[in-house]
Each structure stands twice: as structure tokens, then as C-alpha cells.
Length: 85
Image 1: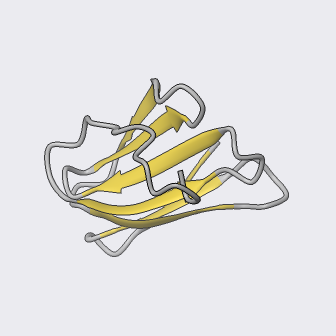
Image 2: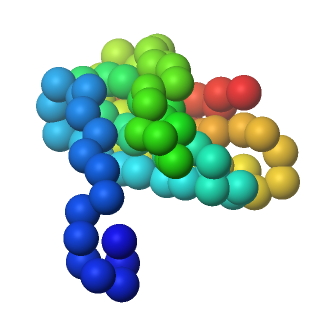
């Protein structure tokens, strides 16, 4: 909670460093990028893991949502950018 400083939830699942996080434009999803080569999609309200995206052969360094279309862009240590629906 930003106002009280109280921790609301801890999301666990990555097996290495978490290198980036982003909320979907509607605030429904929270997505995390990991050193473990995965992108994890979480329900922001419940903290439940919704999906694990795999495909980068190295760590996933950053991510961003398209504010207009339902697309997620991720960039990895392999020098590639991947788009996810």
C-alpha cells in the first residue's frame, strides 16, 4: 500500500533476478521479466500466476505494453525483441 507503506503481496516464481515489471494499461495484469528467461503474467488483484511466456534463450531484460492494442513487447539478452498477444 503506497499510503501506509504496508506490503500487500509477494509474488514468487522466478528462479533468478527479476529484471523488469509492468502493469497492463487497464491495471488487470502485472508482468515480470526474469533472468531465468521467462516472462510471468500475474493477476494484479489476486497475485495468481496466469501464464508463463518462454522463448528468449537468455534473460529477459525489459518489457512494455502497447497502450492501444493487446500486445506485450519483451527484450532479451540475446538482442531480440519479441511480441506477445
